[in-house]
Length: 310
Image (tube, rainbow, N blue to C red; front, side, top):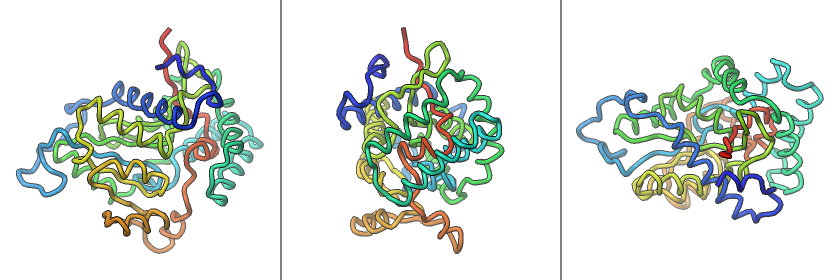
């Protein structure tokens, strides 16, 4: 699979890129997943309605940005990289404009997204994976730790308490997502996968950013590999872009939902959870940057890498 990453995104269909991105994310997630001992699961309660205690064919999948954490992880990571002089102010301005355009337009223009992705990947090319992993740990403490939604964290803990695995599923780099999942005591993370050769960024993605249909493909691939029954699984997200992922599982939740997702969830009688109040709800309610828009949100320098086997 890794060798396919050398093909340019323009030479494959969007569906093929989504499948490739999903399979790559699932493979990377399995390699970095924590064991039950590492997660330190509390004893499961004897009786539970949902999640069902002791059901090893069930798991939970959580979107990250504005679902588990306030704001976009990739944006916070970018702030840390800019602080460490990974790129210049003019590059930060360009990325900020690209993210703002995506938020305001609310559409995914292929040429705009390609430009955002190319400019993002150009920053990471040539940097070592180990360098950004170390920096990522520091940036989590500086900018992310205080932005975790307690309510969503409690939902994830309920699944862990029931003995189930819990995965983050995000367009953020898989390395960054894995750091966050580990800090929260979750099983692991599925995220955007890019290549590295001998521990160095190549500037190429495997497939495409883990966004929209690609997230659904990643969850489907991981479920097959883990022997999960998706009808028993749960998924949580704030964005209508994640409707494909939410529709895969038997227990979909709209958490801090945007307008389109709230409407869709009500129509299908999905469960709703909103942990925003007052000004915070208005502030976070703006559609989050997603896909390549998120990658370009001042931070693509954190793009995760797929270690290509030679």
